[in-house]
Length: 102
Image (cartoon, rainbow, N blue to C red; front, side):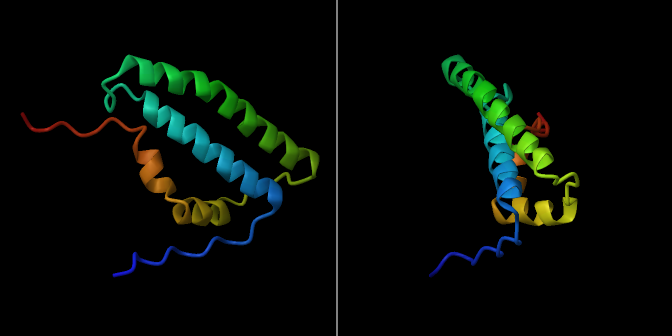
């Protein structure tokens, strides 16, 4: 059985695609740092160290968009791209999980 087909990515400028990629990289690192989801301080430390470089790359992607005159963030288009790239699951890793009812 084949996995379900992912929705197609919307048309993005190169700078928008870079913005989305860098944003997801930051989300991934913050998810690894989340103290409610991890059990290893070393892994959280490594993720925190990587977060700095990913945040710099995100800043640079946004600066590039601004420098190119892309002064609007098209939220609905970028949200579709995030959904297509599993952004909802990845963003969920930064949230505090619900209590177990114990």
